[in-house]
Amino acid sequence: MSYMKAELVLPQELLALIQEYAQGQYLYIPKKADNHKVWGENTDSRQQIRLRDEEIYRMYKDGVSTTILAADYYLSQKSIQRIILNMKNKD
Image (cartoon, rainbow, N blue to C red; front, top):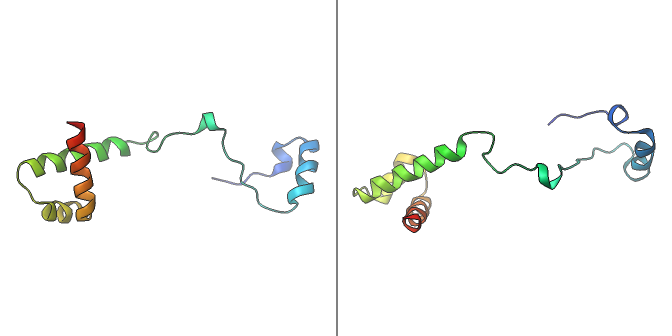
């Protein structure tokens, strides 16, 4: 996120009104609700995590312990257990 000079993007009347409330302050203007993107929408992170979770579940079903899975994937044992439970519920 980068800063923009308000006087370059806002109408003078609006700038004057904002100055009454927050003169000289940094303001964050959030996106409209309909412009929000879901986490991972712009990258393949969601897909990578889904594939990782499927692999963890497959390995668990093949007999690999949660302790070994946690060490192999650098996750806590609780996270591995949560992944396994979620994948079981999807089956």
